[in-house]
Length: 476
Image (cartoon, rainbow, N blue to C red; front, side, top):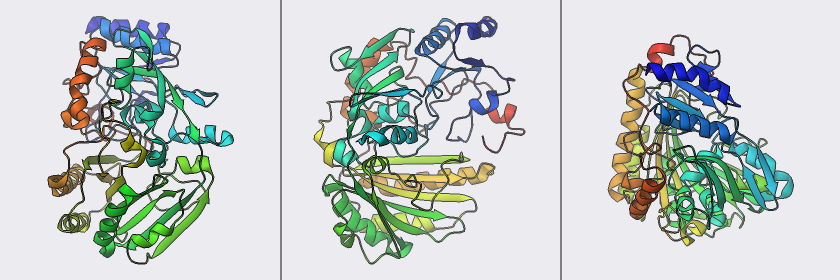
């Protein structure tokens, strides 16, 4: 690879953006994803792209020198697919966006929080994404569930066109008429799977005023609340989108909460269990309602939860779709496992996310996102502090896996593409279901060498922790 090392020094002169190498002042921080991983990977170099031409130059260079690549928009991949020990193509700084009538034209690095601020004056909305630091380039391409998705559909359903840099460095625009197979794949197969998307054209919807609701109960009421929720939420009117979340965090009493938005009143709250200990009800203007998530709510609403402005030390998650209800015994087992043996500096979360509504009115094969007929998603997540011990990290993984195994017998076996798992390949049937065969045909045409679908995170180079772990800034 000596030739490639020499060539890296000349790559910088071909870029509008920046090439960062180990030893450069910004390299340590820029190579890190937002979501920390148990074994973070040190790239050979990072291209901080400023233009589509930069992306094409980086991919052409990597192809010529046989260097593995990863494309990153926000770095929120649970499976760490936006990291590599080769060339990291970072689109996170590409954050331009503009309105063209009722269409939003956005770069892949635009964050969900930026979307809300941009759309707010025009009373338009895009229902996509949870965390305010998630980038559109990842959220939209893997589905993109948001607070009004039961009313307006997923983020990928808003996509009407995209600019894509292919593995060989060619740039293509695709929509329903131009490169329709590529466009089909971009709508829900997963971020970075078919190419590097450098521009997204998204249809906006009318922003509808709604009511933000949050109710909390002690954990002893969890089974009753979940049972009521799973009978109501997936079949509720499209205007009602409410989740149930269970949280067990060290130093705090475990609790169960129902939260979300409703543009159809709040009378349904009486159907969700006993009287809650805490109730928060607030009327929201339309643009704010479209992008509410937990705990990402408008700044004047105070709800508890981790600070999304601080990069977590380690965040692990597994998910599964469910076509039917969980039996009471399974729910009770999940709750017992959640609260058993609290661990210092670890938070455990069960998140029940309703499906149905407009999501289900799209045919499973109309886009690459096959998951249209489910009732809900159950997500099992664990957070630990940045300086957590290896044993604490292993414990978090054991809990996530154990919790998932409890509910799995009643699951569909299918997984939300935006919650990828590090042990599953990008083309695992669990992500794509009956759409996998067509997706493989599309990739064979547009990426025959598997440049994007391959797992390039590790090829035997030293771990980042071994080289850079001495004195990483706390904010990294």
